[in-house]
Amino acid sequence: MPLTPETVEVDFVAPRHLAGGDPAWITVPLHRACGWSHGDDPLMPRVLLSTPDQKALLRLEPDPDNQWWALYHAAEPDRPAWYASFGARTPVELIAAVTDALTDPALAADAPCDPYGALRQAGWSRYFDDGLVSPDEKAYVERPGTPADPGAWFFTVPLGTRRKVWEGRFGAHTPPRLVAAFTAALADPKPLPRTHGGRGLSALGPNIVTRETTSVLAVRVAGALEDRVHSVAARHATPPTVPFPPRQTPPRHGRSR
Image 1 (cartoon, one colour):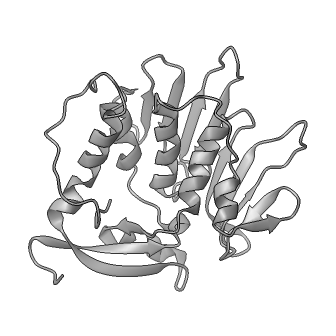
Image 2 (cartoon, rainbow, N blue to C red):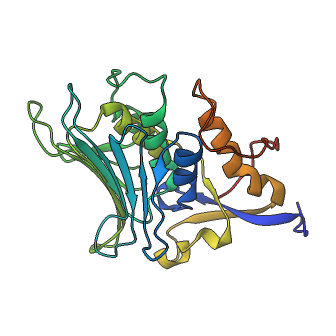
């Protein structure tokens, strides 16, 4: 499709673990579709969102020396407190898979699952004794510990020998279904759509990512987030606490964020 005033250029980025993305893909559905409340301090460059029952807190704060995303959950009768954290360039679809699984009322908290399963099916191979490496050797996951006392999960996408594109961490007590949701999104082979030049992907250096650029109707791009909000809200029996405009109905392919 040629570029016109009604279209925008979209890059489809692969591998997806290098795609980054817009934080609104996570924060807006949590607030508008799941009822998470947020504080508003225009003088602080951070976002704080908490569940209606105040058991979980999502913190997004630009910190060059630490993880930008942090999800904390209070202890429950059958589980100690747990956390998950992610670097600034973690693809937002991966983090959204975790928050979607956390807020889905249809998912059992301790449903049996193998967090490594999706990665093995996608061709990830053994990496030392406690981890896996992606087929392109650009992403790693490991879980140091023992079968009797497993430790935290670490997902790492390095850039050279001394830098990291991003790192994701899940505490040892994080529900396995949330880790499995993350690995399923990570293992998905489909490239991710991005606008605005990929929001800093060029900083990763040449020959690191593959981009296929195409022109897409602007209405599809503009409606992608709104469509996601409606999709997340539809899982709940009660309507979302914050109203939003009627759903747009462009086709699902070709969206971006």
